[in-house]
Image (tube, rainbow, N blue to C red):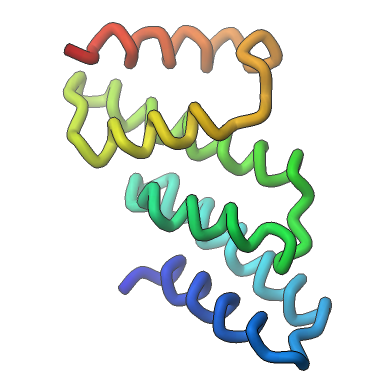
Length: 126
């Protein structure tokens, strides 16, 4: 089980307790952000993990814009992994679609570089 999955499970377990404190939520949010960064850089974050984090944003005190920034970062790393070998694995495509569909940042507000990369990925889809 990945570090990120363990942290997600810890938040779920902790937040079901009445004694779940904001301090603990902040601490776990910080740990989850670090784990997201690590897993997106090595391409091991899954769509299910990202969905679970989305469900926990309130408990983790993550603002929606903060979570959108995380998803943009994930999207960029997924796109980079796809473009690195020019092939799209099913798990990469699933994560790409889920992240892109869930980001509340208008395409015109994304960087030109990211828009170009996303367009290249979409051109690879058969």
